[in-house]
Amino acid sequence: MSILTFTIQKLLRLGLLLLAVAIFTFVLLSFSPIDPVRAYIGADMLQISPEQRQLIAERWGLDQPLILRFGDWLGQLLQGNLGTSMVYNQPVGEVIATRFWVSLQMLAIAWLLSGILGLGLGILAGALAGSWTDRIIRLYAYTLASSPTFWVALLLLITFSVSLKVTPICCAAPPGVLAADVTIWQHLHHLLLPSITLSIIGIANITLHTRQKLIDVLHSDYILFAHAQGESLWGVIRYHGFRNLILPALTLQFASLSELFGGSVLVEQVFAYPGLGEATVQAALRSDIPLLVGIVFFSALFVYSGNTLADLAYPIVDPRIRIGGSQS
Image 1 (cartoon, rainbow, N blue to C red):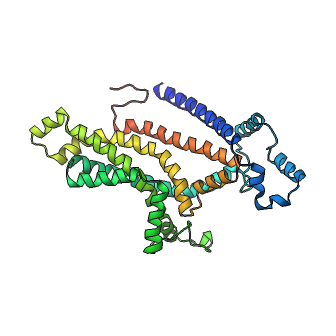
Image 2 (tube, one colour):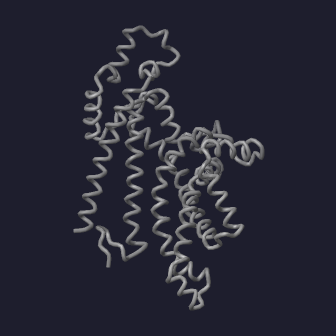
Image 3 (cartoon, rainbow, N blue to C red):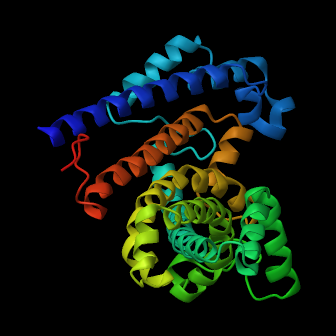
């Protein structure tokens, strides 16, 4: 019953969250200074008559009040349809699926790298607290935590792509090469620098939280008792500290999905990477309301799913934790 109650509660919260996200997105877009019709027409605006503008507005439902447009969108959503993108002239679901698959590869690599390196550096800094190693790691973490994502991306692009010429300067594949002819090594070569850039940003928070948590654990009474029995520092960390670090690190790792998703928008712009982040920028600049709402809707679902996976992973990491809040 606890699993059933947990599932029902999660689904209800997800439904309310997605409804609130959709409402706020529609309301905020209604205050946008960008004229959707003008953005859709672009440079040919002077060649379009008022009658043609009216036809375009009617074609995309832009002549209707906000409440009617939201009701129409909600009705299509219940039928499994997110609408049609004004920029790409394709169903929003297809655009999101295609672009997200490209971004997912970058996000997955960045997510794994940030988790592994962040946990490792945090343990090293906490175990050697006060040493030069700890100071260097903290300086690295604090610097990155306060650095804008686009600035780090530009710096790495200039260093490795422009100056050293060891990584491609843009795109997810060599320009002019058909997708079917792109090898896996070419794809990984283009994926490497954007993934590393995105992972660097995520390392800082996990490192700092892991370091502080380990310091608290090492100063606890039962750790002092273990030291009195002759246990070494790394033995204490392995058998006693790690189990206390893994749950906070796991929480931060899944919570970082939102930061990675938001950071991918800037990283993809810098590296001209054709993922969901680049589509988000195009939808915002050209006021593609169906696509923008669909992306925001999908991103909320993505982040919520990550947090739910963290909740489900807790009983696996620590069997004392039970879904529903009971403990043995």
